[in-house]
Image (cartoon, rainbow, N blue to C red; front, side, top):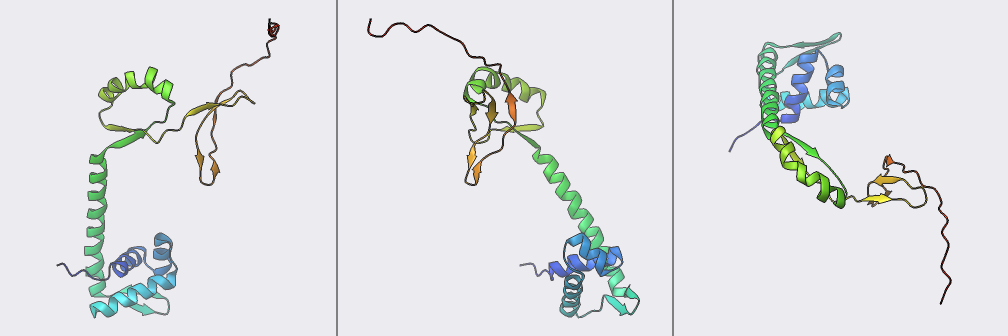
Length: 173
């Protein structure tokens, strides 16, 4: 089993060393400068090596700190590159939500052709979010209700609706 050092401390140290101080590292990592200082101090304790010389006017890397920072920056860069490669291989996903009639009559018959033209895209269908027509406004909207209430949906189109009069046939006759 691998024995890894204090990873949060390593991340804090590398950011502080690369940025030249705890304040900029804290901004980058979205924590307080005191948290960065504490994590670096814990890392130094666990390693048994001083990585920074703390002076009144700022921080200076020790010789051990310079060596450690140089290696860590290369490792983090390699990790970022590896992550980019893995996510690029996974491809991109296009999520499309359509109503059942539109899907059956127009979308699905064209999906195979689209996938041949764009092999790098994976297509996914979200849970059904039917197209509904609001009879009070005459607007077609896409969306579904959530636990927090109705989803906000853009108006897809507003068909012209006008009243029509029709003669009713006499009842019972």
